[in-house]
Image 1 (cartoon, rainbow, N blue to C red):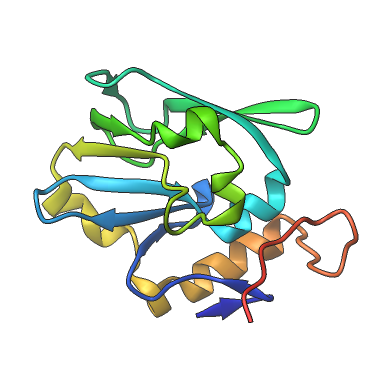
Image 2 (tube, rainbow, N blue to C red):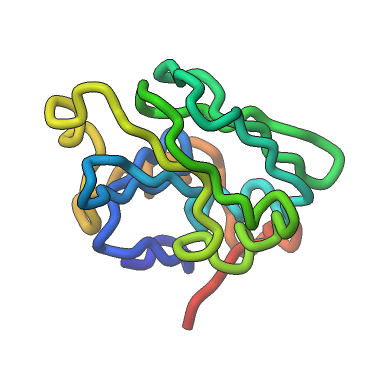
Length: 154
């Protein structure tokens, strides 16, 4: 699916208010990553400092810090759970988030608490389109703005 020139793969779930995608893994864990919209908002990412593996992550609390331009932001988790894995490649090459946010640029993997009860809070693919578009509207997102460093797929 494409929203304002940004790609959002149909096979993923989304947390639009966090600018994150979620992918269910076969082992019951959930992988999180920044969406193309999140990358457009942050611009070039210079560092990602995740919490340590094994840490308990509370819902709406940080799972790491993203540094960009002249600022930093806490990456808040839409889920509570145990941090199972961090993308070690991002420690050396944080630009992978900008280059391949839906692939090699994934950020963390969690073992969520009560995923079966929460999973429907995160719309899958096309069902997320209206929520993503509304988030962009609320943020006054303008993809034509020269300062937006959006990832665009042809």
